[in-house]
Image 1: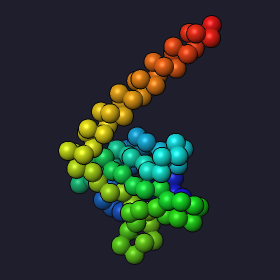
Image 2: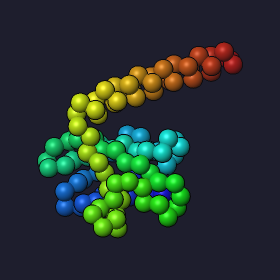
Image 3: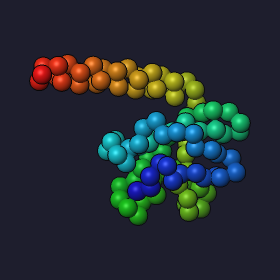
Length: 102
């Protein structure tokens, strides 16, 4: 399994700006990142893999390096909105639980 922070292929075309969802830590099985691709800020997704040797998907042409799949805006933005809403809900629930334990 490759950490999404290590996925920088192809180096000459992609710049990793930040990890939005690290599936290697959340156990979701996929990661999402904000990237710079062709001088434009975009979002990419990748399947993290099943074990330490698995490079996940996608990989570069010959399968040597882990890579990102660039998401179309029509897919990326609705997902990111729902992720932000879910994180807000989770934060509010955590706050309510903490208040009830005081």
